[in-house]
Length: 629
Image 1: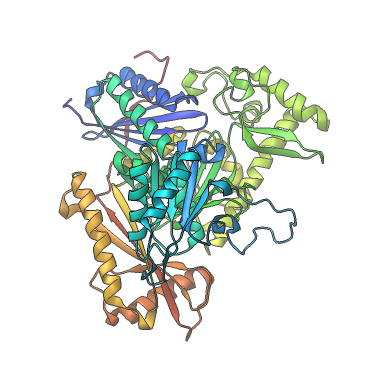
Image 2: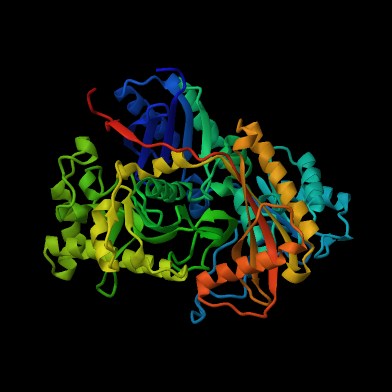
């Protein structure tokens, strides 16, 4: 075997860390699975890679690339374990990030809880500057006032600063000036400016995204250093690449600068894995169903590609209520959390009803049947008692499951309180999860204007195939697809993803009066930057592809849709073509359009990608820790 011909995908989940190693020349592959180490997830990465390579008799030096996805950013935001972060914004807009939107996610709840900003009010500071909507400087930055502000930030013990000025997406110069002035006075403090993190219209979303980015930046830098250090200790010189939530992969440098784009990168890889498998088997339209240890997620795959959205939420006050979380404005694969995972804990609420989640047993102590000290009933415990899991062959026989512990947990917390037998209580847990997931998946499809019954169910993740039949039955689906190594399915997505960069610029205009030359210049600027980054990563120029979209809406509407834009020089002659494209996308979603109503364009997006790896897995051995060669 020649040197550096292996690629590895590594996905850290709440319970298990999944691995897939592929020989690029032959397609031979080996899978691995090890318990996640919550205190330092990089330890599980090294242990898992070492185990798979050793059992397959493959040297670490043969690794050319390791592609990684992590929940570290998500967890830091959920647990509020990031840096002490301040917001510096335009005078008069200190509280905009807390006022948020006029829209209430539950208009009838007078005690509505709203997500807490990452920068509390006493750490939000104002600068007396102002840009007009077109980017013209109305009131310039006073450098002396900024230097005085540095003293206040230092006295407050600030570790990270987000800078977000009104209309900065049109003119980033004031934000850059303030960042440079503050950085001179505050060595060691991390800075993010909104024009670089989320350079587009909508102040609240842009501010929230910038705060989230700098809040987790130091954590991500340290984590990436540890991962690279573990690879060195393993004896590998492999290039480390990171999965983005948009479905592309990026260099470590990009991940350090824009860690907010790593949120939910593991589930994003799962959707890519489903799309990859669908293309190989002639099923370009799929419903991806990924059920792991903590959550279950669904994603519609159409024409071989998952749906992509421009915004998502983290840290929701109410788990399944859109609008109750912190908005993150970044391109992302559109997934929906549809239910609990295998480690989600079941209980009986005050009304005598069975509830499952959102709390999870995680990797430590794990479900009761793991025999690691857990005593609360989980979905995995119920699945074991119903016969869906073989207690002697869990993880290929490497982990024996304790049926007695599962019975005791379910009896004491669900069975006895409700007067149910052990099997009846287990069935109640199992079927409740199935019903909830089916209902959420159906709603996800309806919101996209699709009939879920037209999509085969592609099930993967540690618990996906176990629940796939009942979920498909409830939805009325006719076909279920379970791939090879479904338990580590997301890792296939890492290896199937292209190296890619996403760019965005806002430039408002009514379509029939649009300044096409200005938009063309924006696209040229974004494409040039993307090509430069890909060239630096070693992608040949003739293998780079460029895709364009624009956010458009009917005149006066509050929300917009994504419309494809041709990759050609833009001019007024494209008006009719672009209008037809908008009407086509609008009709797909709403089954009608409104002829005669003007169309507005707000934001222009570009994705610059390298070639998409094409490979077919040829399994040789599926071994893990404890197996003999």
